[in-house]
Length: 287
Image 1 (cartoon, rainbow, N blue to C red):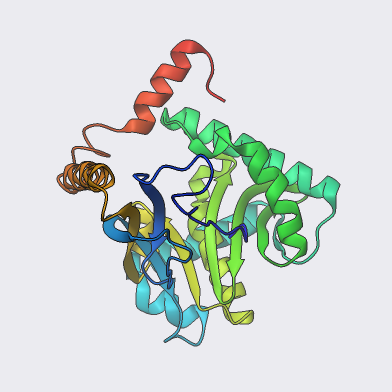
Image 2 (cartoon, helix red, strand yellow; image 1 turned 180 degrees about the horizontal axis):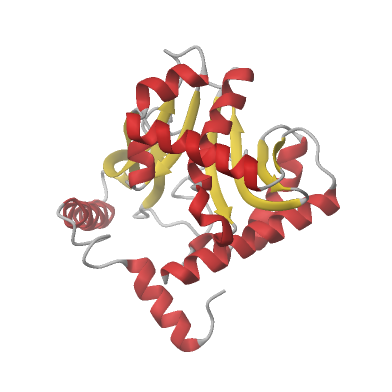
């Protein structure tokens, strides 16, 4: 998404060791990724780690058709009720910035998105890893929006942003990266309203996939009609014992972590983001 390319250096290059192990994380299975420039004698071990979730629009012709087939009667009724209530009680409007945005407005919206995320995750007592790299996202996304490689989807109450979604774009796929909302509007289910408006825009713009990435949630189960696997790639020197052993150790570690997630221990009983929040709250260095 950043249009950067990773290249694995040849093992006899300067400061490289022939037993290096290279790890590439979070590769969606529906993207064709073929390693290039692998050092001599290197092989690749692919390991499934996480489930990802997609909204696949290929077999649908309209947002109404998708919602009718995907959502339960109860969910459809609640969505209509919340959209009506929001429109009646507030001066609501919807805007997507995709292809052009003023730098000053961009700074305001990204600042608001960061504030939304901080308040929401503080409320949940969960650490947000994206806020630690906020300067990176802020710098990256402005140019991407103007190049139509990213977008900000905003729900306004009059002139006040109340829900902001950061998306990245690749061909006919939208990657939903981050979404934050004003917690004062929580009773309107802004996530569902935002998704319905995203779907409308996608049909109008010939977008076929919305990728909601890894992590199973009730929201993704409600809206997504397809799941896929994220893979980790381990590149190792098959003719070097140290490199082979390093790969086996890493592979075993990843297999164990996946097994613990599958039984609900990691991510369920033990949640890393909650532990980090507790620690950083104690040290006073959340973000």
